[in-house]
Length: 116
Image (cartoon, rainbow, N blue to C red):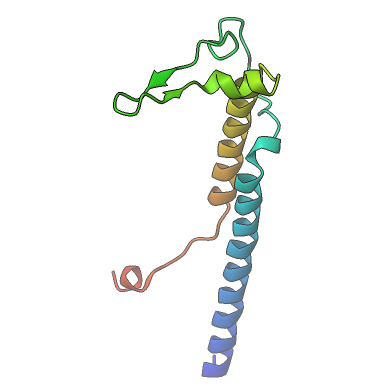
């Protein structure tokens, strides 16, 4: 094989990997920027004993500032009592989709690994 053919093959391989990473990056960006619009993962099961569903999620008051962080406040203010549980289910689906996208990325060989 001539040097020109080897070079062309390498460029084609690099471009194919570049576009795979570009496509994955766009998909990941879309998932993470729009996480609140992702539906629940199909395998997520709800139970009646879910503490989020009953407004029992962690409420904490910062000792120095006295600021209370109550995740249920937003849900009450926006009249959406399921907000926290729906968000949790969306984040689970986001995580599963992220793993799938990353798992399907092409292998990358770094120069230090080529020499080993």
